[in-house]
Image 1 (cartoon, one colour):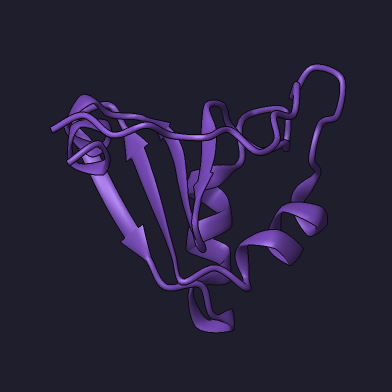
Image 2 (tube, rainbow, N blue to C red; image 1 turned 90 degrees about the horizontal axis):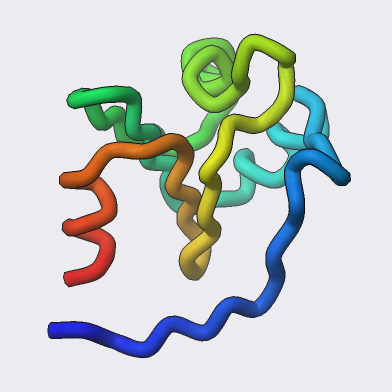
Length: 90
């Protein structure tokens, strides 16, 4: 089943890099954060107890939010993993 998805906002990470504290300010209010890295997928419920691990997974070497990052409803999908996006599109 293929659904229409409306893109409400697009941010070019090269022009507007989000540093760690701004990233946490957005993610801490999310229902969940799904991070894809290679063949692994990690799901977080953002709360202070997992902040350090979550931030290690979502920030790149430059200390900014990794790409691609999608906000779908009140959830964020960070990084790339084929299975993660296939599940998202169901």
